[in-house]
Amino acid sequence: MTKDTVTHGSAEAPSAHKTPHHDSGRAWYALAVMGLTMVATISFRQMLLLVLQPLKTELHLSDASAGFLIGSAPTLISGLFVFMVGWLSDRAPRHWVAACCITACAGSMACFALAQSYAVVMVAVTVLITAETGLNPVVNSLIPDLISPGRRALVNVVYSGFIGVCYGLTFAIAGLLITLAHHAVNLPTILKGASDWRVACFFAAVCGVPLAVACLSIGTVTRGHQDHVEPHEKRELLAFVREQWPNLRFFFTTMTLFSLGGVVAGMWIPTAISRTFAVTPAEVGEHLAVAVTGAAVGGFCLSGLLTLIIGKKHGTNVSTVIFRWMSIGAALPCAGYAFATTAQQFYLLFCLQLTLQFAAAAHVGHLLQTLSSAMTRGRISAFYAIFSSVMTAPGAWLVGFISDSFHNSPRGLVVAIAVVASPAYLISAFCLRVRQPAAEPRSMVTL
Image (cartoon, rainbow, N blue to C red; front, side, top):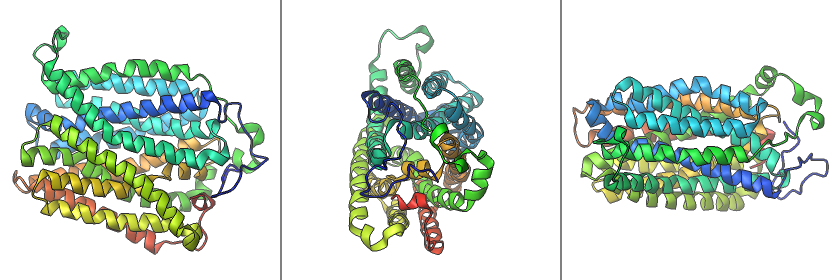
């Protein structure tokens, strides 16, 4: 493992190598730009979820086809390309990689807005998910070269908390864009007569242009590695992965199973509410914004509180314990979807589910950074993205397939969400309980 790993309460090691950018004004500017860029790409994804129902209507899609189109197929395909982005994060100027990612996201939203066929929508969504997911390796590669080791764990939690809070606000942003599109005048000729959701997606695409310029303004960030790493850190990537594979596999599997519940509910809950209670996409966006923002704030506060309370008792296994109990807890509101009878109950259950989800996810970025050596952070993050994509991709299609088996019953989609999401959380908790190593890998100690 890298020497920049630190534990709670420890001071920065005197020998820890610092780049010229550590904790400088430029470092905080770069983090702010990357944070806003991530928020924009999340907004693009939320827009797709809010307009899924009108898209289904225009293209005459079943739930299974929609789930395959928006979730399963693009996620699987994008996994094939994310590693390339991770490789570029370790080799190329990262500000250029980030700028290319946000430009690709904006271009895909424009194509989505104009798409009239299943194939074009598939390509647009695939490019969007690839570029959005590709930003994570860039951020995980940048943070260790921007923030000193002593502050990195805290900065990762704060950064994750910011993204989590904005995850909720992006529903409101997407809903606002749909509302603005409804009242828009003097539209370009290409958008004349287009549906509100298409105009909104085009508006979203335009927002990517200034963010691409902001990413380029970060400039080249010096990598703090080659001359200051131990010999074992200069090994080839495959040799590193081969040695660390038991730890990587355990981490990837349990965290991905845990995230599957959030992915399934996050994708289908907006559609389920719109369909079951005849609520417009804009209204769903506004209410989900409140629910998700509250969940993010509550989740990250809960994570910090639990770490302080049970940290001394469980020591190096504190992260395993937190994840296990959060998994069990999140399974309960997912099962509750099948019994909810009002939209407000759905919002409340979704808020509770995401609170537990965010509580467990607070340290994932730091874990990924410390699981890898300085020269492999981007690619290890990409490996995780690919692994996660492959394991979670069938979930969206499976929910749609189960829903279709109810023959368009208003409650069919709701039951399908509960049937897929709740067991995913419970299986994750079971895996964490069965494999609780006697000695945690060093990266897990840092929690």
